[in-house]
Each structure stands twice: as C-alpha cells, then as structure tokens.
Image (tube, rainbow, N blue to C red; front, side, top):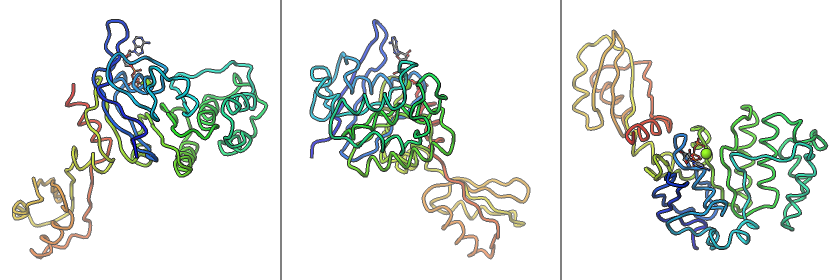
Length: 300
Ligand SMILES: Nc1ncnc2c1ncn2[C@@H]1O[C@H](COP(=O)(O)OP(=O)(O)OP(=O)(O)O)[C@@H](O)[C@H]1O
Ligand SMILES: [Mg+2]
C-alpha cells in the first residue's frame, strides 16, 4: 500500500529566511506519527505545507496521493486539521461551528456525537469567545475530527489542556486511529509522544535529525541506563569486566553502575555471584526527554 504521506527534501522559505531546508519522511496508513523539535525548528511550516496551506518551494510532497501544491482543495476534503494558531469568530456558537464543519463533507459521524465525546455538551450553546482556553482547544480538536477524515493533523493539540483532559484526548486520538485514520501529531510533550506515537521524527534546525519508534530513539540516542544499590563492600571493580558496564561510581554506601543493554540482569547476577545481594537495587532508564535533549543539543 502506498504511504499516506511522502515527503522528500521539503524546503520552504519566508522571503529570504529559510524555515525548512531539507525534511523527508513517510507516514504509513494507520500510524500515529509524531513530530518533535525545539521552537522555531520548522514543524508547523512542514505540516502546513503538507496540508496545502503553505506552498513548499522545493522537494516532493504527496499526501493521500495528492500534490498539496496543485490539489489543495481536493486534499482538504479528506483531511482534518487542528492548527497551532486557530481562531473562530467570537460570536459563533459551539454547535454552529460543529454543524458548519460537518456540513463541509457529508458522511461523517453526527456532530452531536462528537460534541459528547469531546466533553463539550454543556457548552453546546456557548459562544466561542466565552470558552476557556482549554475548551476552545477541545473544540478545535473536535472540529478537526468531525468529518472522520482519513488523515488528521494536530499541531500542539493538548497545549492548555488540564491533565485529565489531556489523557482523555489521548484516548480519543487512539480511537480515531482505531477507526482507520492516520494521525500526524506535533507536540512538545514527551509523555504524549511516548504514549501515542508509533514513530517519531525529530526536527531540528530545519531538517529531520532522527526518526524511529519511541523505544528505538531511546536505544539509539540514550541507550545508557543506571543501576544503583547500597553496598558495604568497597571494591566493585569486577563489575567493569561485564560487557554491558561502562562505569562504576560510589557515593558513600551508594554505588552507581552505568551501562547498556541488559544491565540490570547482568549486574544483579554478577553481584550475587560475588556474594552481594542488595535489597535496594534500582534501575533508571533514559527517557524520550533525555533523547530530545541529547539530539537537539548536538545540533546546536
Ligand atoms: N509567516 C512567517 N513569516 C516569516 N517567518 C516565519 C513565518 N512563519 C514561521 N516563520 C519562521 O520560520 C521558522 C519555523 O517556524 P515554525 O512555525 O515552522 O516553527 P515550529 O517548529 O512550529 O516552532 P514552535 O515549536 O515554536 O511552534 C521560525 O524561525 C519562524 O520564525
Ligand atoms: Mg509550531
């Protein structure tokens, strides 16, 4: 099956300023594909080019088989979009917005269902301008999915949402995928990316600098983990003979062993082999946030 999105060497400038220099990736059907990266890296510009909202200056882009530069109107009927900078007329009511958006493409679910799913039933008759920031945000996501689009773009979808709403939103996004849609998600929340995304592209300084599954990125870029435990025996240098171990340090009674791979299992077995059985063995694994900081620091 052809990928839902194919981007090769995308480039986009605003006047003489290059915002995106060389971005390439593909997104397969049914994936939740994450785009991470520092402020100003070019994420929003990239997803706007994919949606035909901005005209790329270079590269090849195919979205659902369309070229967004030439076939933006056909494309937009089949995608849903929550933009980072969205606005609606202040006096438009919540139900009117949903009714309007759902009328653009027939065949989607009834907007009343979407209203309930996204926790907006109480605000059915409220004017857009009277909604709280988080409620406006929820409405934007609801509008992006009201037509059951094949591909949904969400740019910082949970910014401004309370923790409970964020979690509820994740469940709804998973549901959207289960119903057969593909999702492209731009986010600054590492937990969101880790929980939701099948694959992630890290964009930094106008290009894709890493791409993998969340676990793959952790393995690739921050593969080191740490095992700590308390011990009265000073000489633990035998641990250094293990292939997995990169270093052993002590602070008082607390020992820290750094390394890769099956570190915990190998260290525990070796300790027991040497007659040491710590009761407080702990392991700290690198997170996606560590990866993000490592990758984006390297690029600076
Ligand atoms: N309309 C515009 N005119 C001129 N420069 C722009 C315009 N839009 C974006 N830029 C610049 O292009 C670069 C990339 O912006 P973009 O919005 O794509 O970043 P981003 O990765 O989405 O950042 P953030 O995480 O802050 O949302 C930035 O340096 C920005 O200042
Ligand atoms: Mg942005």
